[in-house]
Length: 226
Image (cartoon, rainbow, N blue to C red; front, side, top):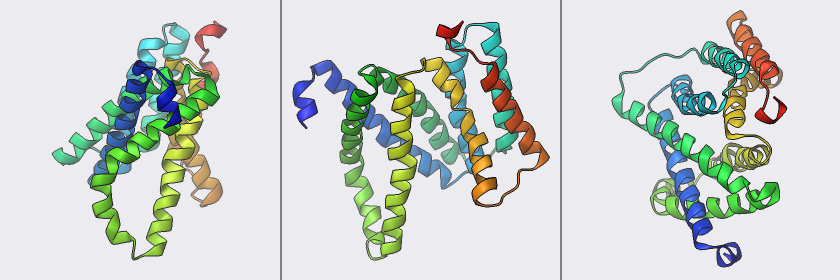
């Protein structure tokens, strides 16, 4: 609350907008997952970030890198379409909100890494207030099961707190387009972690996808390095 007291009206609106975006984006993501395979939800989510990267990566070298990364991601997630229109609607809403999250997140990151994280915390508090009236009704049923409560806390920390803080640290150092391109590392890194932690050895298809994404990262050059 002290942060809201000392910042200007425009920045308050930015933080409220970011909080609302986080609340709606996460709700849309989980509602889509309830109806669609995660590969399809991830693919739709990446469409917007790919658009941002394509808009900002203006050199031929970086466009080739983006094409390689996109090909690698789609090989990894092995997209299968669905006829569930409600699920698709939630997935596309999540994808649009993800683009808005990147845009607003970059504006917040202009305060620097430390300031950006402080403003992210304020935005997440706004998101909590926005979701609470709806979420508490469904969450109430889980309070009688301590393991579900602990699982929910773990999911919140691992899926929201840690990733969003890391995003702010990255956004403070990368252009919007470069950050959007780097997001293609997520499916590749998930596959690698699955192999190390869960013993899920990647197939030749998955190894091809990882190789394409890694090659794209090596080929990409941020604007300031060109």
